[in-house]
Length: 294
Length: 189
Image (cartoon, rainbow over all chains, first blue to last red; front, side, top):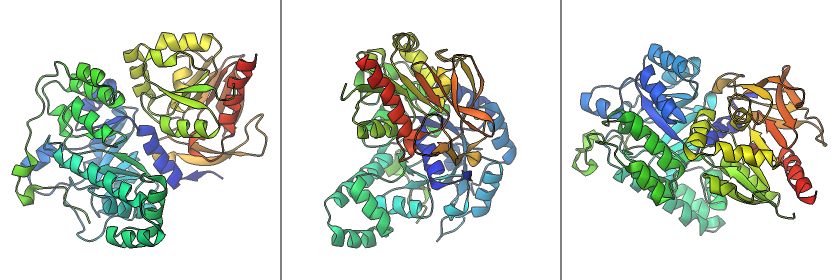
């Protein structure tokens, strides 16, 4: 009579994160600061994406000791990343009772053809997407939440904007198609037809859509919320800035009041330096993360 | 009051799902982010989400006193999950009860169950519990309406109704209907 791990329970958790900011943290101290600043959840990592990018090499799931330390430090949800296709890392994270697993392109993919079968888990998954077909394939595999990929660790919002606009545009296009055309669209999107039909009827994804990858300022948060994101992930943008606590509070405030420019302006005042940023267009092909995943 | 105006606290959390259900039941809905949004409301919903984020937001926006005034004036309020926590003695202090956060455990322990809910006609209610609290203690003026494993998960105190689960995530709108009865009853009085 008591059912755990149903899709409604998984996707429902993402509903409760809406309008919120999920912050990358690498220590319990950072997690406490993030929670005090109003994070709706934290992502427990050994290195933020900017450092993963700098260090190179294979990026893996975090040490369980570090995940546990963060779980003990805060009462808000704790998420953690598994490599794309690395179902054993996901099993470990479920055993640790993290609240969400991010099957993430920020880590080095473990399988170049298959993502994790996310239906097999009680813990919910969030996955990245650059377009509608990718988002629906992940949902078909059991993802209970989608985030734009953006280009993590750059502080450049351009890729997140591109992904959100593409997803939004593709949804709007589906709205205009008839049933026969929807079947063709499903083929073109390489996405399950029932999910394509649902999106065409509802005008939105069947799960919550957040934005990730490149958010560094309150105005960035406002921008992506106005483009249809229902909340934001901030990776390197907070703890790589000169005043993390103030910037964290400011991004939280701008996410709540995203459609009120006066509030976003007030939140943007006197924040000090943003993170050291990289322009995505200047990166070499091999340095781009968003192309990982299939 | 054919179409009561119901506010939904929209600082963070599951406010859109509540708005959808309330509109479906014929209410007008206004998202509430600042004190001015509370003016003229016939009822208010405090949704689920993270209670820490909501408490910080209430403090930042100066909403605590206006919310107490709204409740004090007899305006019905429905709190769900984090909304229940924010209504308790240790937060806004509007209900004479103490909620225990994440009482059922982390997300992997989140669940759905059939609930016997006092006073709701039509059989058990399918209830969705997500990192849910339960009610540890309640004063004599608080009616406890449902329980899971011996822990209270729904309560009413006068014009205030609070549940530990998420009626907005289910197709069953009976909790919202009961809340709107409070709202409409007050308008007719």
